[in-house]
Image 1 (cartoon, rainbow, N blue to C red):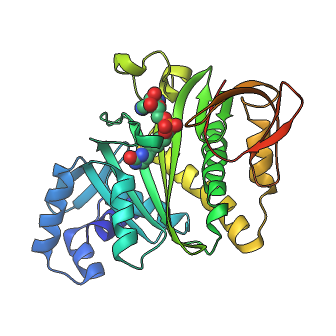
Image 2 (cartoon, rainbow, N blue to C red):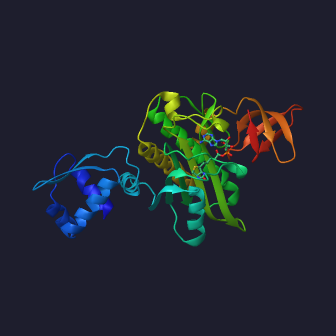
Image 3 (cartoon, rainbow, N blue to C red):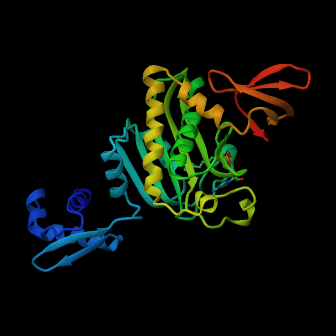
Amino acid sequence: MKEKIISILKEHKNKFVSGEEISNLLGVSRTSIWKVLKQLKASGYNIESAPKKGYKLLDDKNIYSKEEITLLLKSKGSNVEEVFYFDSINSTNEYAKEIGRNSNMENVLVISDIQTDGKGRLGRKWLSSESSGVWMSLLLKPNLNPTDASKITQIASAAIVTAIEEFYNLNVGIKWPNDIIINGKKIAGVLTEMNSELGEINFIVVGIGINVNTKSFPEEISDIASSLFLESGLEIDRKKIIEKVIYYFYKFYNEYIKNKEFNEVLDINKKKSVTLNRDVFIIRRNETFEAYAYDLNRDGELMVRDKDGKESVVFYGEVSI
Ligand code: BT5
């Protein structure tokens, strides 16, 4: 109901629409409409009400809510079927995995204004306690081989870079495979987690964290982290970033799932790479070795050449530049 009332107010933007009209359009009593409007005002919507005239939506910028995000994604015809929104949650990836384990739902977006226990890879932390970033996870159930799951990370990285470059005049790089870098600092990261068995994927959760309007970082990461605001001086409604990232994610994802076409994503990952054409350190559980990273192969894996000229492919592990 909230969503429907917001849509009606948006259709009549800057014009009054009477309680009676809304009530006729939705087939519910004027009292229920009044109650919902009261809730909307309380959650930050700037709605003017005037006796005899009705209600007018003045400004809906910067409102971060389930209704706004659902409307935005629906109007753009994205594949997202359901949005779960939280003001605060431990980790959107954890919640999406929970849905994945307990339901048949897919193409679900879990989003939270803040995270109290955001996750990075290998048990690391993703700091997301400020409501200035985009912290979201998509639950997917692709018919893929588990060995192809790493491509989902690259699809997400390509989507983030493409989306950011639409809004900001910034040079965005990808540190293979999941770090998004501007001026040497990390502004976004991707965490892809998979639940699979016997060569089949049950579900994949791709978590995306983007520092959008963040003004400062805790000391532990202040040297390595930055935000789109700090790099550009531009403050932006986070919903715009969500819309574009989701749009490009599904554009690339559908191309890959339906047509097995991965070239555009690969091209972006290569073109934007800050890892290629240089010496890098490959860090694995028991060893660290230095090698020259010279290309990504067709599957997006990192191809390196060691000091003795021996070439190998890096599927996993940490790469330090
Ligand atoms: C990542 O891991 O970069 C994956 C980040 C994924 C975050 C999203 S937010 C929505 C979803 N829900 C979750 O719980 N997670 C996902 P990794 O490559 O391991 O990088 C982690 C490292 O980045 C940390 O050890 C810090 O050094 C650094 N870091 C932590 N918070 C950061 C931040 N906000 N901005 C930049 N760097 C950060």
